[in-house]
Length: 311
Image (cartoon, rainbow, N blue to C red):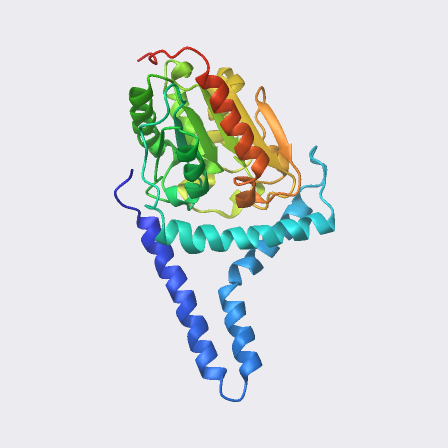
C-alpha cells in the first residue's frame, strides 16, 4: 500500500475549510436569522452539487449526435442527485480521511485471481474502499496505487502500476485483472504500451475512462488534463500503440457521465463496450452491474490453470 497521499492532505484541508466556513456563517447569522444561518451553511457544504449541476448542463449541450442513448431530464436529475451523494462519500470521507482503512491484501483464497485497482484524476486509493471490501470478502488478493504527483503526466504513473502488477502476480502466480476508473484506464494503457507482452494482465476493466478524450479536458492546464483532450496527439499515439490489446478490455460507459462526454468517448474500438444508463461518472464505478460483472470475470479467469506471467 502506498505510504503517503499528498492528495489526502489537500482534500482534508478543503473539507475542514468548508466545514469551518459553514460553521462561521451559521454562528454569524444565527441570532435573529436562523433560517438564513441554516440555508447558508447548507449551501457552503453543498457547493460541489452546484458544480456537478453545471457539468450535467455541459453534458447535455455537448453530446448531440453521440451514438449513446440520450438521457431524459428525470434521468439526468436522478444521476445528479446520486453523484452529489457519492461526492460526499468519496471526496468528503474515503479519500481524505479513510484512504488507509483497507490495506493491500496479497493473500487470498486458493486459485483466486488477483486484482490491481487504478483510480482516476484527483483521486487516491480510498476511492476503491467498497471494492476492496468486496474483494476481501470474496477471497481476491489485491493491490492499489496512488497516482501522484496528482497533476503530472499520465506516462509517469506506469512504474506505480508496474509495481502493483508485479506484486500481485508474484503472490498469486497468475496475471491480475486491472480495474481502472476514469484516467486510471489511460494510465493502465500507458503502462501496457511499455510491455513487450500484453499477457502480463489477464484482463483490463475500465469504468468511465476517456479513451478518446473528453470535452471537458479543453479547460485543463495540467499535464494529464491536456493529454485527455479529444483528438489530441497523446491519445492518438496511445491508440496506435495499444490497438492489438483491445480484446483484453471491458469498457463501461454511461449516458449520464458528467466528466467523460460525449459518452462514447469512454468506449474503445475492439473492446467489450458496455453501456449503463442513468449513472454519472463516480457513481458508475459503484454500480452493482459493474461490480458484479467484474468479480464474475475474475472468478472465470481464476477457474483457468495458473501459470507464471512471462517476464
